[in-house]
Each structure stands twice: as C-alpha cells, then as structure tokens.
Amino acid sequence: MSTTASVGPIPLPVLVVFRGIGQVMFQESALTGALFVLGIALSIPVLAAGIVVGAAIGTAVAWFAKFDKGEVLAGIHGFNPALVGIGTLFFFEPGVGSISLLVVGSVLATFLTRLVRTHVPFPTYTAPFIVVTWGVFFLGPVIGAVPIGGDYPTLVPNPPFGAFVEAVAHGVGQVMFQASIWTGVLFVVGIAVNDRPHAIWVVVGSVVGMLVANYHVAAGMQAIDPEKLIPRSQADTVTLGLFGYNPTLVAVALFLNRRSLVAPLVGVFLSVPLTELVPRLGLPALTAPFVLAAWIVLGLERLESRLFGPSPSK
Image (cartoon, rainbow, N blue to C red):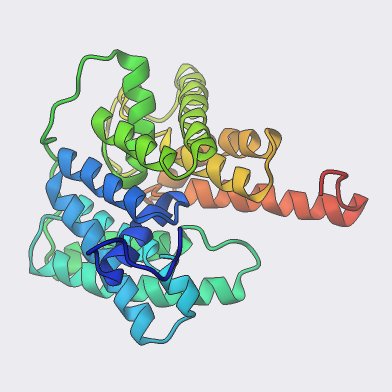
C-alpha cells in the first residue's frame, strides 16, 4: 500500500494514525489498524480511545519534529505511543492524572523510538513502550492516578467456544490488553487482509505459547497476573491469554527477519519463561518477554554468522 496517498475521502493524517496502530503487529495498513481499533472497541471502548489518541500524538510529534517522512507516513513512530495510550488506561481509570500520563508518555515514547532506532543495534520493536509504561505504572499512584481495581467488563461477551479457542484468541487479543475472543478474531482478520503468512504465525505463536505455558503450570508456575501483578490462578493466566501474546509477537517478528521455522519457534519457547520471570522483578511483563526473546535470537544468529559465516539460505 502506498505511504503517500489517501484512500477516497479519508485524509492522509487519519490513514497514518491507523497505520501506526497496525504497526503494533507489523502491518503497514490503515485497514488493519482500523480493524484492531474495532476489535478493542467491541471489548473495552475506553481503551480503543486510548490507543487512537496515543497513535495520533506520536504521529503528530514525529511529523512536527521532522522525523524521517517515510517512517512517519508508514506509521513507524505511531505504534509505541499507541501502546502507551492503551496501556495507561489499562492500568489507571480515566482522569486528569492518567490523561496527563498518557499525553506525556506518548510524547516520550515517540522520541525514545527515534533514540533506540538510532543507537541500538537491534530492531526497536516495542522497547520504548515498555520503558515508558513501566514509568507510568510506578508514577501513576504518585500523581494521584486511580488504579483499575480489577478487570474491565467487556462490552460484547465471549461466545462459548471452549477453553482452547478462548485461550488462543485471547493470546492474540492480549497484545493490546484484550481478553476477548471477538477482539482476537478481528486482530487475526485484520492481519490476514494485509499479510496471510503473518496471520498464520500470529495464531501459531499463540497456540505454541499456550501449550508451553500449560507445561509451566504443571511444573508449578507462579500464580500471579504477569500484567497487573495481582494474584490469579495459574489456569486463568493461560486461559486469559497472558502467556500467549508475547509468543504471538515474537513469532511474527522473527519470521519477518528470516523466513524460517526454527527462529520463530525458538523465540516462542524463550518468551514464555521470560513472561514468568519479569513479574518476579516487580515489573509488569508487558511486551518485554517478546523484545528480549527476539533480541536473544537475533543476537545468536549474528554470533553464528560471525563464527561460521552466513548460512546458504542468505
């Protein structure tokens, strides 16, 4: 899809904002981003507003700061602020404190994205979102933001598809904090309309992540919500997709890097224990396990290439 043309009557800034939301799952597609927002709105409407506002702030800041025009139009500088926007309202009730954090955090994530892209020898992924949202998580109560006491009620109830389908769909939806089957399905559809192999890897990542998490449950996994750091049964953490979304992201990211089976699956297997480890440090997992797992695999690939030369497939 062209990064410079409007589609019919839709203004270019709107397209770019939705491209930024699509880039959360590596899709430079405004239609994909729109389907993501629809999926979130069907689950938790206030979080749909948060992700759009965050993406809009990031896009505007990058444009007026004269970041690379091609990157801005492709939505590259919109997806980390978009995640900060939705993440802030996931942890805190809408109010002066949380909205202030959303705005400031989105701006910071935009500049941090540029910094990481310039100085870190690995893909940026969602690292700026992670760093900023950890700050938001701890600073919120200090400035009077009111934490969300439990889970948001979902607007459209989940259909009775069974635990397996529920866990897989939730694993996709939780990329943007959504425990909704409908959201997960719309996310997969949104990706498929732009890139079907990516949609397949999204589902594979969630399935494998769920299976690996089930093994960890049998081995005595910590009974805690890796996002909100509150007690939650081991079975619930799997069914709610809390161990599926990082494998989902790492599978697509590593498939994009090298179209092979091995690297994405290694990344998926790494991301599950990392999802269990990060909360033990007193931090919400967010997408840190995805970024760490992807960087580890990419680092190992570079080391292999340095020691043994490039593989015949390159």
